[in-house]
Length: 418
Image (cartoon, rainbow, N blue to C red; front, side, top):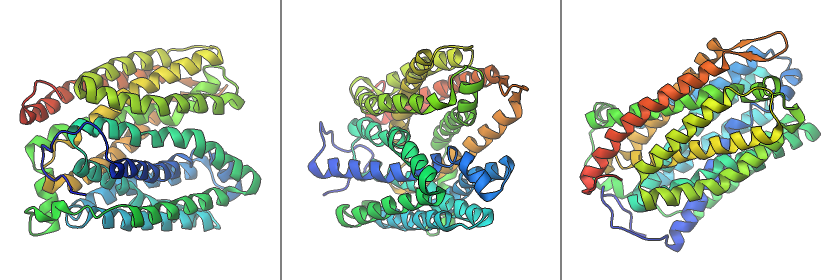
């Protein structure tokens, strides 16, 4: 297959057979990486007594992934455009599998912590490599649809991964959950090795002499700054609500803890349908108009969600579903637009820096949320509505910044909006 390496690839109306296979393959890779990250939180109730650790120590193990992923994004950015992206993906996927194996074999907390650090160092870069591959091989006119399909990995991890992981942990111990992830990751590596063609067209382009210069050239590029800011703000707002979602649902909204899987399941099922539809809508009606719709809807639903009182399970499910529709309608078109910003010779480093900013800002968002939230004697949370106001404020700023980002892309494409 001929790789697209220019900034304005020829228009296309549908996927070739190889492109369809590639989207499915990249979605599976993302599924394993996202599942490894998201499964830690629900396993907390099992891990803490099993290892004899405190909630604070468990929190360190969870955040270790994010911060090590942020560091690796910066460290790898200078090298991200110097290798065949298929080989780069296999390298980081192998390291990710090694880190997961350390978690599966961990006899104590310290080995588990090392495993989470190793997993983050490698797994945190995989998303950036996937984004660079997507940008290289798919025209901008198709990228919304591609992002929508790949993002179903997040929903699939909620529907299939988390319940399956909890089931395995409850019946055979938490080590088995990580063992199952190793099996999936090995299958993913084998599929990438045998089914993906080399992605090396960017190697024909002129690059800086050293990796450090390549990194500096990417960070110092003025027209990238706005896109980096949007990436940072979107991640900061999103990660503020996630860590406390289950506690808020149980203690503030009055939903029995046994019904939490039902909320995740139904929200995930709707997300699997919503992702591809949002991707198609962003390609058909424009990525920025879709982003505006998603921003307005998510802001409205966040304000409703953070001000709910004791409500029924049905109400919580409806609010969660609509909130996820808004979030996906922001996330998918924003990724598609931002993917068109970097030059072909800097796509890997740009994606790595963006991934690093996402991890750091997400971690800082969680820390800020923890500093704002207070717990009452009955377990309910105070000041949760403050988080809603902050999320809305970051959404407004990111919406304004995204206007200028998409204008930069649209000018190069000769259109008013993308």
